[in-house]
Length: 496
Image (cartoon, rainbow, N blue to C red):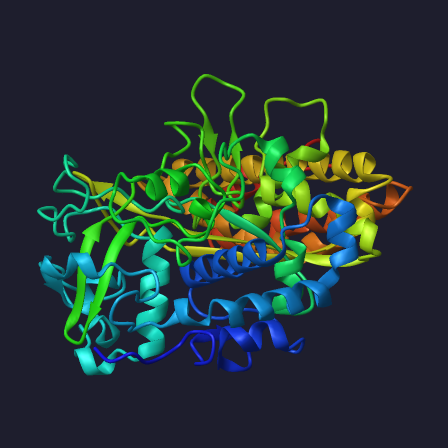
């Protein structure tokens, strides 16, 4: 294909309220509020923008990060994009962006095979949007995002051409491993958000001191792959990506080459994961205090705001057995240096199922994302007080949920229903949906010196639990009213 579509100049990045913009526009404009697109696109694009900033101007420490500022970072990134403009051609004949001309011998897969929302193979088509697109219907900007997402968020399975290897002696299984941003069932990722996309990139910029303290990336920041692409699965550049920060921000989990009719699609680098080498993306959260590490997974039944205390567990210095998200640990606690009063915490991911090495989406799987408004003061100064209060409040909410679940289940068991557990789970979900509306007020109340504001919000949470019980349990007949009163939740002792 002819050399065309440079990602620095052409619009391909979705921005909320602005449509598609170019890489240059991201760093030139301060009026682009937040990334759009799917959850996996947001994760992959955020990591790409961070990789560009890390390559352009990684600060030495927090003081240098503060002096750099958003404007300084933007200027450095624009200069970097100009210097490396030639590395961002999507269809370069010799060095296409994040692609491998050497895999041209692999089988061509239709674009629909690389899109999880498209029905391919034996999958039944239920909705019109599941119909595989014709090659000409997949625009250049969509192809660029497809390549980027598959570097880190690709599903495991047998869609790859396992017969093609680039490094001598490499043996591949028929089922490729999932991307490092997903792992087995889908990791939950978290980033700081500011008033614009470029400000968000600056807020998430890691320093050399951060990377050295983390000790996860033995080769430090590393070199982005578009500067020096590995020649295969096991050469020196491949090993450098596997053990550097750049290799987590823009991993090469798939070797891809775009074609007019689809894409040559081969398994790429097998990046170490949390079980093998203790490696994870900085935006993921893991607990490595035990022999077997645990990760914080995306869960459609549990909105990310309910994991706030786990995501911010680094504030509790005395608890060594806790989830730690390096992206938040290093970036959130330095915001007071720049007089940053408030920020947003974005968390998102995709939940997956798997069978025989094949990952897929079932009826119970879905994407999740949420955004919380937080104040810098809550994480500094009196942070321990705020975190203790929010932790206590979340424990009380969990207890309210348990009482509600038990009450609804007992009601339906007494009524002779066979699906008491399912009906109780549905009531619990309704409770959490109503509670989410009051959570911003609860977060603010936990910073108050007096306990009365928190007590007031928790009282509203109790009312949410009562309403969920009333909605779930009919009271139309005398018998229903009798068991309704018998099993109604006793909330006075479970929450203040």
